[in-house]
Amino acid sequence: MSMKRGLLASGVLSLGFVLAACGSDEDAGTDNGAADGDGDETYELRFATEEYEGQLQYEYAREFAELLEEKTDGRITTSVYEFGGLGSEVDQFEMIQNGGVEFAIVSPGFTGTTVREGQLFALQFLFSDDEDVNYQVLNESEALNEDLAAKYEERNVKPLAFWSEGGMQWTGNRELREPSDFEGFRMRTQESSLILRSYEAYGADPTPLSWAELYSSLQLGNVDGQENPIFFIEDANFHEVQDHMTISDHNIYVAMTTVNADFYNDLPDDLRQAVDETVDEMRPAAQEMQLEMNEELLTAIEEDDANPTEIYTLSEEERNAFRELAIPMQDYFRDDVGEDGAAILDKLLEEIEEAEGN
Ligand code: 6CS
Image 1 (cartoon, rainbow, N blue to C red):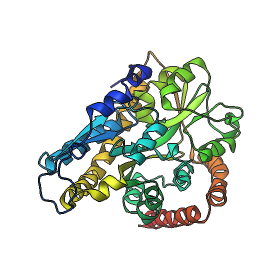
Image 2: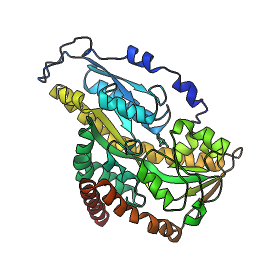
Image 3: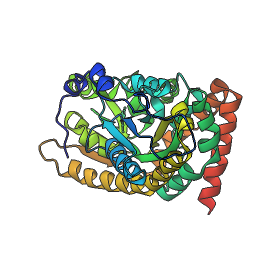
C-alpha cells in the first residue's frame, strides 16, 4: 500500500498529453444534442482525483467509472487520473469549472477563494463524533446538498455527493496535546483563509501548500506538521518524516464528488439517471472503504518499526480545550462569508443536532 513514488515524477505526465488523449465522442461530433435518450450517444469522460492509486479518491473514482460503464452498457467510459498529471488541486478545480474534465473529486479546502461558503468544512469540531451521524448528515443535509451545492453551481460545478475520508489527525515534529503546543508551530494547511485562521487561533503559524510539496517540506523542516486522515498519513508516508501523531479527530475530511454542471445538464435523461444511481451506490461503498483503510493503516503506522511514530489520543478534556478556541470560528465564518454562508452553517448545525438526537 505504501506510496513511494515521487510526486513530481507523476506531475511530469503532461497536461497536453492528457487532454490530447482524452475527449468525448461528443467533441468528435457524435449525436449528443438531444436529451431524449435515443440510445446511441457514447462518451469518453475524464475523472480527476487529488490522490494516487491505492488511496481513497482514486479507488472511489475507479469504482465509480466501472459502475457507470456497466449501467450505461458501455456508452459512458471514464478515464481516471491520479493526482499530479493535471496540475495542482487548485488547477483541477479550475478544470472542472471550465469542462477540462467532466468529473472530479474536490476537497473544499482548495476552493475557499472561489466558493467562500465551502470554507465551512474548515470549521473544527463542527461535525459529530459519531461516524454514522456524519454519514447520514453528509448524504441527507439540505444545507449541503442543496444550498451549498447551489453556490458551487454558480461556478458551473455540481456537487453530486459529500463524503468523508475519515477523521482528521495531527502529525508533528513535536507532541501536540494542548493549544499551547501549537505556539509558533509551522502548520501546513490547504489553501483556505478560514483554515489558516483556525490554526492562528491556536497560536500556530500556518502555511498553505499543495500536498505535492508536503513530504519534502516536512522532511526539510520547512513546516512542522500537518493534518490529514490516518490512511493518507500512512500512504503518503508523512509518518516517516514526523515523530508524533495526535488522534484529535478535530474534524472530518470531506471530499466532494463533482461534475461539470453544463455537461451534466446536457446529458440525455437516461445517462443522467445512470450518473445519479452511480453516485448513490458509491455512498455506502465510500464509507466502507474509508473505515477499512483508516483502521488498517493505523495498524500499519503502529507496526512500522523502521519509522517509529509516537501516537497520542487526546482525552475529551484535552479536545475541549481545542473546541473552545475553534467554536468562535463559526462567528468569524458568519461575519466573513456573509448572510448566505451564515444561513447554510446554521441550517447544517440544526441538521447535525437533529441527526444526533435520533
Ligand atoms: O492534504 C491534502 O491536501 C490531501 N489530503 C487528502 C486526504 N486528499 C487529497 C488532498 O489534496
